[in-house]
Length: 351
Length: 281
Image (cartoon, rainbow over all chains, first blue to last red):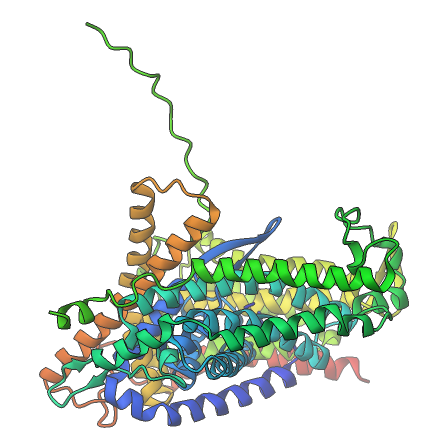
């Protein structure tokens, strides 16, 4: 999503540049203590890593490929303020050393990919961590969810900026729909990669994952006066025993019950007016271009069962929720950190 | 006794689902030219100034884009920029060229008939503007990259009073960029060399896990570097050591250098004003 020169007019580019400069200045101030402790070397190498990670392309749909944006990954690893700095550095280097992304659009790129993604990812991951009480097993899931949400929000941000100062008038609904739609797919790839990377780092050096310390008992590594890095394995093991008991039964029952009520009952109250895209299509006149989905013959098509009315909607809702729960559990099993309690620090102190 | 061996078949090479964009081998900034000798900070300001001047050209003064293109090509010839390298670098623009070509079809407003198609007037104008501005801005950036090695660009930022912390982080990022991207490439090669025959999900998981290990290695390398610097008495950011001085080319710029670098931007701005002044009687 690197915006080139000329997409947005000069006043919008300058305005986004000023906003980005202000936020990056604030981030410099907020992360000053961290950078003074650890030096610029660690932040530089994190920026290096995000840059390298952005070089991995993955196929999104026929003929399109996306690449990792990295905002949510940076937040999970080094925290929000340093993440803003790191992303700003990556985008600066990309614009000035690799000519990727316009130099006058640097403010826009930093605002969208450095600030909006980081802010949304920080909010979502902190919220998820607080909801699960800081369990370490939830960290990759929180990071993945944050990544999935942050990418389409940044795409929507681009649509908003384009509405304000774009080169040619394009219907806002259409642009937003196209941008958010493509970036939902990119967001899935980003979520999977972010969750897997965070899980891998968590398995080997849990002190390097800043998100693991949010609302939880896992301490960060402290640099002692002589410069040696000290982990606290006893506290980490205590967190492990609480994490291995998994989600409490009561929480599970509440979540399943709420899902059943919403999917089976409240769904009957859903509005039957056309959604945003259908509305835009109707008013702009390209509605007739819509073709039926190849799955239109499925027994649960259109969230109902033919001939059963309200009961059909209820059954469809419950079946859909059950299928989604099954897929969610499968994904959670795939990205669970493998070696809880088997990392070198804990195995040596076990002797 | 002969043993019947099964026929040796080429193992089907797994399609590489995840590709790592390779860095080009050419290094155009190693070619000497008058542009190469200019200090980095004037080239940075010159490139940004030219891009800004181009973006500020209104649709009514569209011939100025031709002047800007001629200036870029002229400077490129003087700087001995290899054409194929520059074209390869411009490929990054392709998705936006597609967007610009689609604009006359999707934009709103009054439409005009072009052959068998009904195209939006605002879309044609906007698409053409986006194409011109994007290409010219990219050209300015490519010229900067072709004539200035990365560490000099960062030093130029330092001289342009970018915050010291940011310059320090950028310096360390640039130092290890080649090593880290090389590490990622080596891990990918190692995965393929060990015959990874899993499906798409398995390969993505393997690549993501190796990325996780890459991060840990980067971080630990950073820790070792930091401790080594402290052990050798580096004063830290606050006292002004923003990084190791790499080259002696960080000479302060003379007025003549600034004039040379800002000339293209000023020419474009002057041409815009002249054209607009002429159009408005």
